[in-house]
Image (cartoon, rainbow, N blue to C red; front, side, top):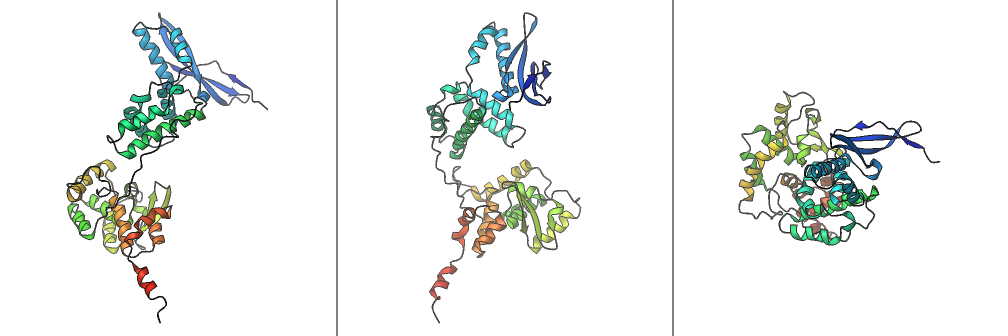
Length: 373
């Protein structure tokens, strides 16, 4: 049975000047869609122009772009609105679907602002003004070619992925009907495997370097004892610390789960002193993420990265190296691979198997004596 709908004539304002919408409701007066309208002035009169429906992928950002185009052309004495309407009717640029995508995602997805900056700095100059019906694989290969060796290969791959994501969004909205031109673009093969971990002497040199900064030292110690990622360590609260079991509840934001970490008695004493003055929901590390990064990166660079090429990811020490160090030393101590997986909260055992080569060669001795009396 087809649901009957009707449009309520009242124009409702949005958060942008000159942009309104009319509600489309069902027979129970529940909003099921909306039609966007822009207002502009010509010869001292208010004029209104219907842009399109939300269900067709139209968003406030696109309406703002159309309105600005009209206002700019009036100011410059160029084409009248009727000509603009004719030109814009069947032409949708990649810019349009990109900003529709960002607008739809900004309230439900973290990292949208970062994606938008990436688009504006690296993608928009190439294909922003192109009619999406004219977009080809060659346009994207051009971006890949120009950006390779100028930015990290993983960054180039992320450009291709973002373009494909925007097109898939437009396809779902019924705006784009062609084959996604990114589907035959091969990603640049990347060896992201970091081989660098800190040995015992390097760990001590790092602890000495941060000894005068209690918060920084606590961060390093917690990282080395639990292997938690940066965001995980910064989110540890007083209530997460169990001094009886020498354990800590950790939040894995990457895998959206919690797991348990542990620490030795030396760190236990530091934690006792730290949490004594804290409220139950206070975080142990009170400095902001950006501040912590600004403090520790120069230390890591001075201690371990002097003389290394900027592109030498395998051997460069970064904050994530502390997590890698934790797992590496577990393997060196002969910790079973499944235990390492649990302590690292790896969802895929393949991630943990990267450390297997560091484990002692105990299998050789067992096999050599397997059938001996």
